[in-house]
Structure formats: C-alpha cells, structure tokens
Image (cartoon, rainbow, N blue to C red; front, side):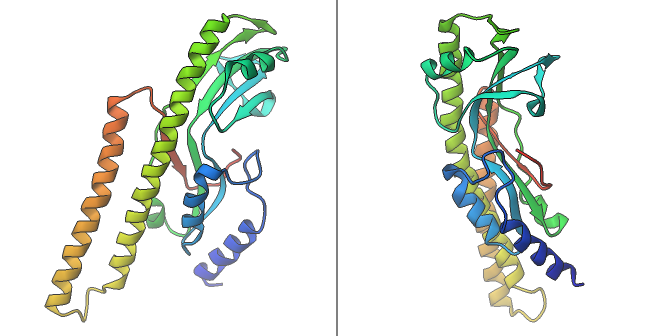
Length: 234
C-alpha cells in the first residue's frame, strides 16, 4: 500500500477515537493548535495537555513520582487556590507531591522532515513533595507560596502556547510556499519574488523562535513547551 495512503488511513482511525490523555479530550487552551495540526495531511495528534497543576499521592523513589502507581488527588488546568489544595491533601495516605506540568503534545508525523518543524522542547516545571506517609511536612503558608509560583507558571504557559501557535503557523506557511514553487520551470522574476517571500517568512518564524528561546534564558522559572512525535499516554 502507498505509504501516504496508509498514513491517512491510520490518521483517520486514530482521530475517530478519544484523545489518549487521561482526561480523554482536548483542553480548550490547546484546541487551536490541535485543530491546526490535524488539518495538515502529514500530522495528527494522539494526546495532548495544555498544562496542569496536579497533586499526586504515592511512593517516592528518588523524589520521582511514578504517575501510573499513584492516586491523583487534584488536577486542574486553571490556576489553583490554597483551600482546594488543603482539602485534597487531607486525602493523602502516602507521599503527596505537588507538580506543575507545561504544554505537552504527542504527534504522529508522516516523515522525519515533517517532525523537524515541531522540534520544540523545554524542561521547565515544578515538583515539590508536601507530605510523607500521610503527614503534612510543610506549612500552609509554604503551600500558598508554592501555588503562587505554580499559578505564575500556568499563566506564562498560556502565553507560550499562543507564541507556539504563531510559530507553527509561520512554519507551515513556509513549508507550503516551498512546495508551491518547484525549482524547475520558474522564470527569474517569479523565482526572485518567491525567494524574497520565503526569506521574509523565515525571518518571521526565526524571530518568533528566537524570542521564545530568549524568554527561557531570561526566566528559568517560567513554564515551557514540549512536542513529541511518538504517541504516549499523558
């Protein structure tokens, strides 16, 4: 079977099912990006998360929580208030950990070259243990302090989602322009115009990406973006 046709069949089959994330649906803040990607023949998303604040209850091994072997006491894709966190902590029996996780997209790409325009990754996040064997190990004031940081990260994450969307649009437009102008049988005037237009689009996209990278260097505590090309449970 033609690889392109096979990819299209696989895409249709996967998109007919629910999102593979724990929530099972696409978050509002990332819906435009998912729609943009799934509207391209060379991409489709398998799972997504716009970013979240979560409280996990489980065992800790080297301060790393294994999400598959723990209980989710609280999860929100919006800013979190202290009262909700305190109530959730009362249900902790093991070692509860507060986490902030930024945007994650799991995307299948038809070819490696298609995946290259999605090569955006950052490790910014937050992970702090709050209790041990059900006993709260920090004060409520400290929890309030942590939530202020987590909520700031959530707001910054939303701004980064918007910047990523603009960069992705530029990259896809540049790809379309490149495919629209074959190297052969193009007169000099059209060729010069297309190259100038391509350079302008490249500068716009590169400027957007540069601003994103500069933002990360300026603020190590800010949230980031990540895009993966292989499907994975979120």
